[in-house]
Structures are given as structure tokens and as C-alpha cells.
Length: 159
Picture 1 (cartoon, helix red, strand yellow):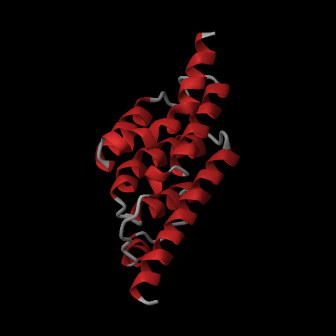
Picture 2: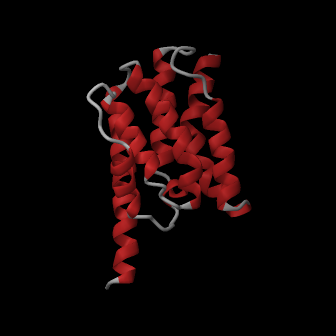
């Protein structure tokens, strides 16, 4: 029963973000969420069902308004990433993908706070080849948000 209660709490965690944003700044809420996600155990320490619940909570966090808060995107980051990170054959493709996302520095204040801990959990799962479908869905959501954010920013600059 305790395990079930923990699962419910972890799954419903993203539901409180909007309420928290009414009382605290975006930065404060993002730092609280980062701390909470960062304190979740790694995949080695918990069972598979809790693993799935943790990733579902992370996915809901990425799809939340908190993660999508507006900000500016530095389009030169991709060029910098490719220049400084030659893709060596021995390098793990998952590491390359995660490094690319981290290099985007999507300067939405909340996203820049949350992205490292989100990518950390995804990295752990990808390394262990666990819950790959959920991880790929989260990465896809992140990429879509970054793309949408950049399109919105540039449509404002060049209507």
C-alpha cells in the first residue's frame, strides 16, 4: 500500500505546478521541481513499476506549462555543439543526443533549470536500455518544445 501511495504522489506531482506558479516565481517553482526530481532514486534503486511511474511524471513535467514557459533560444548553440563535439565512432549515440539537448541552452528560465535533471534521469535509463519508449517520447517532447519555442520567437522577429 505504501508503494501505491508513493506512485500516486509521484504521478500527480505535475498537477500542482500551476497552483505553485500562482504563489511563487517561475524560478522558485522550477528549483523546487528540480530538487524533487533530483531526489528521486536512480533506476538501480527502485523496481520497474516505480521506474515507469517516475518517467511518466518526468514526461508530464516536460509537457507542463512550467517547462514550456517562454524564453529566448540561442540558435548558434547547434553550430557550437557540432564544432566542439566531433562525433567519434566510439561515442555512445545516446550521449551525443543528450549532449545536443543540453547544449541548446533553451533559455526559458524554468526549462534551463529543469533540463539537466530531466536529461540525467533519461541518461540513466538509456544507459541501462530500460524504458526506451518512454525515454524517446520525453526526448521527442523536448525537441518539439524547443522547435516550437524557436518558431514563436522568430515569428515575432520576422512576421
